[in-house]
Length: 436
Ligand code: NDP
Ligand code: HSE
Image: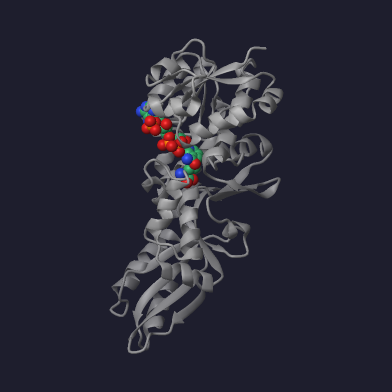
């Protein structure tokens, strides 16, 4: 059988990895897919650089339209990133009857519903394993392996760059800036690394997972997002003293009141596997009602780990492209007419436990005032310690962990606490998850 013909948009970190893996493993891939998979055209901005990478064997163009409209291509792989022109190109490829493979979570989180609708109307596939968790087959696991389950919640480390930064800062004492520069050098970071640091990239990914888990349209705009930019070394240290690690988690949970969708630094008990996921590794915990809790772990970013997922999609599309569209796995795991609309909870409606750090005057009665306010809002203290004031200082840090409380109550209580004369700075608050 003739090889399936692929057009590649973008030859950066992931594009290069995809090209190399397809070349190196072409024989084993052909045996698995049932026919060869051939890169037949590449589109980039910098023609000279691309030619130096792929040689003369593959036509290279800087006109992306020439790929998405090429009648000789079966699949378009979009690896340029960002929303535009990626959205227009993907829709154009679909309109020209091409299957699409993409690693672009920003695109799918914001425009996925529109893209999947267009693909359904044309009877083509849009595959996106590489968009979440790099090389971890988490989309496959959720859409197929766990299909018997009612999914209850997902919590994961799904941004390699921020996890790499946190690990580096803790283990080597590297500064935030040095660690970020290393992540960029290693090809982990987004073109705009602010997306990694401020939680947006993780929010793109958890929004996609949430839709697949609960059978709802993708709602990135419903996500609460907080990044690692304002984490203080003191809190990382105090958390460790209490037996916790701070990780940037993406969390989505189906509650009786609606769906939680949030990304924020989180205290995770040190004994949990998730707390020990280091560097650019990712890990996703999924709780299903039948299977219980399962965990998926592996490289969350980087050239060939991500290419591994892109090529897996290419093999899937190659195997399935002659199948009746109705017999394929639906894009969001649920049949499109079975998607439901559920309420999305604001962060204020979230029930979780907390870490607080309060800078207070070191004098009698301070703790009693704070405890009274917390009690007024049904916030119960689980653990508490006070850092001894340095010599000559009449201030101290009070660190406490709470039991579960409603975020709305916590906000009001903290406003009252911060209004006390003896509380000398805004209270630091970090959410905590037991992941039990
Ligand atoms: P890079 O920035 O390394 O590569 C992007 C490529 O696209 C470059 O070849 C660039 O060309 C080309 N490109 C960008 N815009 C255009 C344009 N308008 N016209 C033509 N070519 C363009 O990105 P990555 O490979 O890291 O990421 C690609 C996608 O994969 C993104 O969606 C990213 O979020 C996703 N992803 C990345 C992972 C990673 O570990 N890096 C992991 C998982 C997903 P030029 O170099 O000439 O500018
Ligand atoms: N910038 C992303 C990360 C790439 O660091 O996780 C993988 O999606």
